[in-house]
Length: 391
Image (cartoon, rainbow, N blue to C red; front, side, top):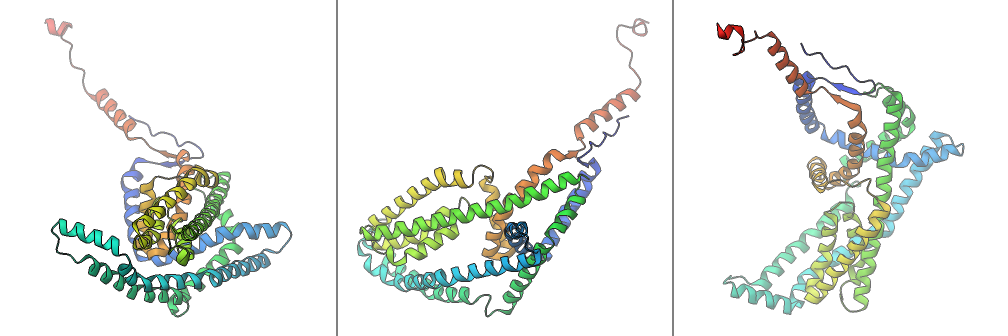
């Protein structure tokens, strides 16, 4: 009879009956639970990310003998002050440039005579009864009508919508509690770690914090570098006459590129869409210059900035990133997409940490033991060359 393998000390032992029945049931329960309390989970995730990012600053103040409660207050006041300052300096001109762009879009179709004429000729040769100029102008007019209302909504969100204000206050309160009790939370996780090893729990908490904080720092640096590079590049192309509209919307293009950089793999493509679209209406050559510039910027980023700032630690498969982005979008729209991305290194670090510490009871060994037991219980058949056969 096959014997049950002993549980290796310091590992999470998962028997076969748990793999067969409990784990699938837990996945089903988790699926429905996530759907029911998705908003609550989102609030706690945002608060947790804020607390993880700000905790090193609070810890630094503790090293210089500043009380933790005072340190949390000072860090939060400074954090909010920086956000307000950046919003006051950058957001109004970005929104104004976006509004100017959407207002000017319908007129760009009239100015881009050569491009529209070529497209019309291609349409006529293909036998398509399409008025290219009318269609482009109608599409741009519709876009111009919708985007200003969207930007107004973005500026007012969190100020005029009571629910958003409530969520923001709750997130701040939760993150403050997490910062104040971060040591207690860390001790709780370490003391109740599944491997029953306090040292494992402490190491996991340390690695999880480091993974998220380092990723956020690296991503902010990359976004700032790419956004600044794109803004300066569009302004430079305008100064040399290669992209006349570049300087007029350079700040918007730079901020857009910086935000899109937060989305791995897909971000660089999305970052190039607005400037390329505007450049098409200046001239096809301008669009070519813009595309070449983006390719050069992405080459510098991919071969220099990303290896230096990110390294190989945070690299994950593109399919994983796309899945996380889509899942975040289903939970909480665009904000959910952006929040889901910093969770990728946390999940990766968790899997890497738990993999060597998890022991699944094998199925092949069990099947082999069962076959051996059955074989032992069966009566032996007489061999053809024995005495019974000769009789």
